[in-house]
Length: 108
Image 1 (cartoon, rainbow, N blue to C red):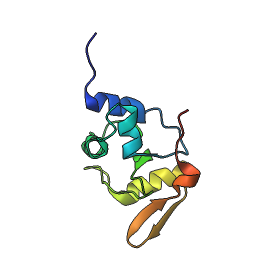
Image 2: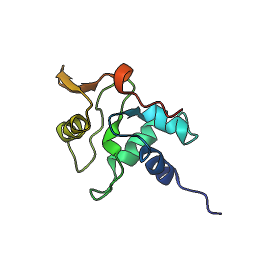
Image 3: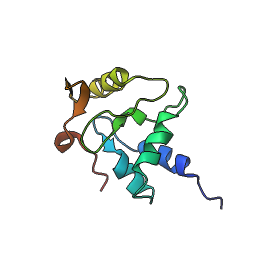
Image 4: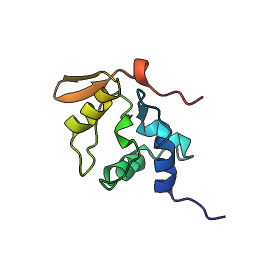
C-alpha cells in the first residue's frame, strides 16, 4: 500500500471541512499527523491549481485571519467564497477576519 504524500493528505482533510465552517492551518497539520507543519499546509494550499475543487478557502490562520493568498485567487475572493457559505467575514485593519469561536470546525 503506497504512502500518501503530505499534500495528498492535506487535500483529503480539507475536503472534509463542511460548508459554513473554517479550519486553521495548524488544525489541518495536526490532522495529517504533522502538528508542527502549519506553514507547510499553507504552502500546499497556496500552490493548488485553479481547477482544484478542494475547499481550500475554508482554511485560515489561528487568529481567524485570511492570511495566505492562493496563487490564483486573491484574499477578497476567499472572503467572498466564505460569505457565500454563510461565514461572516469582517474587514478591519486591512485584513479579512472570521470569528473562530463561531465558525471553527470541530471534526469530533
